[in-house]
Structures are given as C-alpha cells and as structure tokens.
Amino acid sequence: MAGQEIVFQSHIAHWTWTIAWFFWFVGIGGMTSVAYYSVRKAPVAYTVLGAIILGLLFVVSHLSRWWNLPILVWTMVTNLHFNFGSWMFVGVCILSVHLILAAILAFSHMDFILDRFPIAPKTVRWIVVSLRESNLFVGLFGFVGVFSVVYSGFLLTQAVGIPLWGNALIPVLWVISASVATVAVLELMYVVGWVDEKVSIFGMKLGLGLDAVKLLAVLAFLHVSLGLTSVAARAGAQELTTGSLAWMVWGGVVGVGILLPMALAAWMLLRGKNKPLIVVSAVGALSGVLFLRAAVLMAGAWEPLA
Image (tube, rainbow, N blue to C red):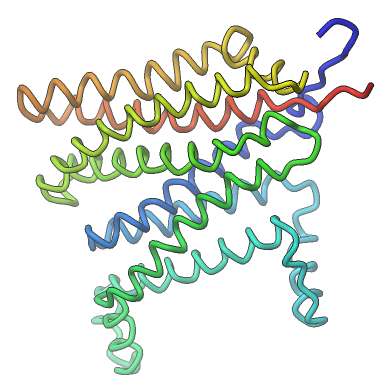
C-alpha cells in the first residue's frame, strides 16, 4: 500500500466490541426464534427476548446522543414521513417487530403471572396461549428472526467507503454463525435441564455440519477479500490473515470457535455425551461467533483518497 495511508474505522468511528456484541445478541435472538418452532420451551422464548433487549441496549449505548432516537421516531410518526430507503430505518422496524413478537411469546409462557392474577381478562389469556400454540404465529416469529440476522449483515454491506464490508458473503456468514450460536445455546440449556436429550443430540449433529460450513464460509470470505482490487479491502483482509487481528481469526474464530467444538462433538458422538465437554464446546462456539463479528468490524478500513 505504498504511498497510500489506510485509515481503519475502529480508530475514528469506533465500531468495535460494542457493535460486535450488538450483532452477536441479534444473531442469537434471530436464529433462536427459528429454533423455537421445534423447541417450544419457555427458556427458549425468554432467551430470544433477552438477546434482543441486550442487543438494542448495546447499540443504543454506542450512540453519542441516544436521546435523539426517540425524538426522531416521534417526529416520523407524527409527520407520517418514513424513509424506507434507509437500511437503518428498515432495521429499526425489523428489530421493533421482532421485539414485540418476542415479548408476546415470552409473556404467553408466564403462567405464574396469568394464574396469580385472575383479574386478567380471559380473552387476553386465551389469545396469548393460542399464539404460543399457533404454527402461523411461531412461523412468522422465526421468519422475522432470520430477517433480523440478515439485516445485521446487510447493515455492514451498506456502509459507504469501507469496501471490505461490501462483501456479499457477510450476510450469509452472519446467518451461518448465528445458527452455530443458537445450537450452542440449546446445548447449554440441555446441560441445565431446560431441554431434553434428543434436542441436544440433534443439535450436536447439526452443529458439526454447521461448523464445517462456517469454516468454508470464513475461508471463502478471506480469500475473496484478499483478491479484491480495493486497496482498503486487501489491507483489511491482510489484517485478518497475517496482521494484528490474525490471532482473533485463527485462534478465536477458527481454533476456539470451530475446530474445538467440531473435535469435541465428534468425540462425544463416538464415545457418548459428557456435560462438561458440552459446556466447553458451547462456550467455544459462542466465543468464536463473537470473535468473528469483532474481527470483521475492526478490519474495516476506508478507501484512501487518490
């Protein structure tokens, strides 16, 4: 990059760990919404709601003047003027709908509240329980969840001036890695007794395949980025492969996040399940997903001016 200064956005815009946590929680909430269709347990619904709330708190905490957000929403609603051409606005709509659906579904599992307060209208009780059992509602819930994860990937691809993030593989990589994280969450739920063993066995087999696909997707992302004509994209890719972020990619994303869970899953499928190893595998997978998001964020650099 002789004669051209590369400026990484992490030094100016500071899209680093805070935004990585946001993407991480949105990914878990989104793909766990899909898992709920098959595993209709209260802890799964609570996890989705909690993940969405935490993700939103992280992204709001990153705003320098967060109080402008509710003011902006109020202005748009009162003036009936909505910018559907903005990915930021579309994302707010998607996450808001996802949050509302998650809150309804979580509330439908709170029998301890519904039973304790008999003054709650019978109609409300009937509606929330019916929604919990409705394939249509649960299917919509999963669809919006996937949309949330895809949105978080497209949010990066729409960033102006950072060519590394323009890679179309990012939304795909986000969905695959979020699916890996969801399997890890279900495995942890099995360890504490919140889901049954057959969910864990299926998840372990599915996770093994997802890890292999994730590894290929990560390598493809790095290969494509290294071959781009953009100076900034190549600089970012070099940071990921051989530079200051290489430890995070090869040690965190690939080593701890993919190879370790794959090895442990293969061992347990052959030798039998072991809860301590399940915990190690799940924590490793979740850590790898977070490292992936943080590394891609920190590698983003602006194209140098000619």
